[in-house]
Length: 278
Length: 192
Image 1 (cartoon, helix red, strand yellow):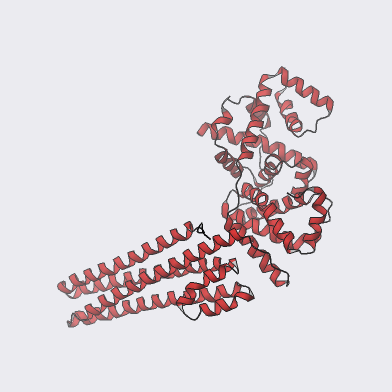
Image 2: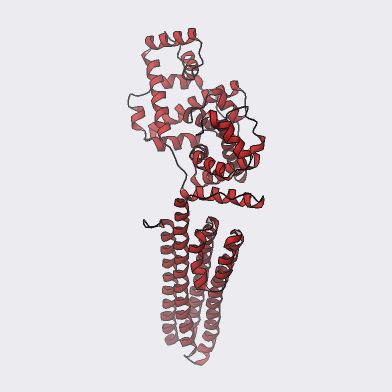
């Protein structure tokens, strides 16, 4: 009768090919005498083969980041930079372009939202009366919040351009300087940069996400302010309150439109792939 | 991977900082590095971060490689260390201790269990889910031993070197990893 525990101890060494000839001969004899032991050995080998076939691979973006990280180190030591494979650059370009488009779309939607809220506030001020004066104060505050949110988005976009500029190689500095001059130059920057450095594209994509985050925060604050305006109006006058609720509804829709735009933009960035013709 | 005969020349080019050599390094070894990191960490983002760290370490420390072992073994060592280091730092954040080999002495039971494997045991299991479950539940040091020896095919001696332990300690870890693997898989099959 084969001692299963001793058999298992030897199975490891057998599989590793480190049994002596004598031990190997004995082990194989035990296998013949013990069908269960043969089964255990076969199961383990099959399991190991199956585990070996499950092979995860790194994403193109991950490899891209390796090139960028090494190039950043090499640049510090004044060494020649690594040449990045064309297919990885194409992916970075596609992602950067998608990120900038997404940020533009969000900015446009936010601008529309701000207009809606501003006009809602202005109309409420025109209602007149004590209630309107109190409402008007709140509406003005809300409008100011919306204006600040839009400004925050613009400032964050600017910061992104500057941050992106810091990590780009010297030959790309010109592109970064141009991009801080105007939104249209900023929109062109990723495509110009993608041919020169990947990290710029990645930073741009990160920056676009932050910009979107500011957009979300700003819209939420505006929606909240508008709701508070509506609540204030309800206290002052039933008719004005009705109007206020309508206006608040418009602002809420505006905020939802911004949120949808952001979600769509994020999806486009995630799915961005190089064009076949690239 | 680079053939052994060319290995000395390749390492020399890396040590001189030759850009083309580093491009070859990434193209030829990124799959292996990522595979080891991912199998130990079982998380895509962490594995990608660890992979980046591995190549930076090679760049910074290539001068320390004296050629006493294969370059690939050295790279396996750096990859394993990067992954285990990330687990330690991840566990520190969550206030967990990473014990070395937290395996109770159930070897007799496990030995019996291996002989009672159902005929369709392996066919039932989806490879990826199986690997993920098993490697997630093994302690980091056992999963590293399993990944290097069983999945990457390193010899016991190479596994020992990559883990920075003696050959006898590596044998023990490999053996215990196989035993623990079966226990985990048996439980998995009972759930399925």
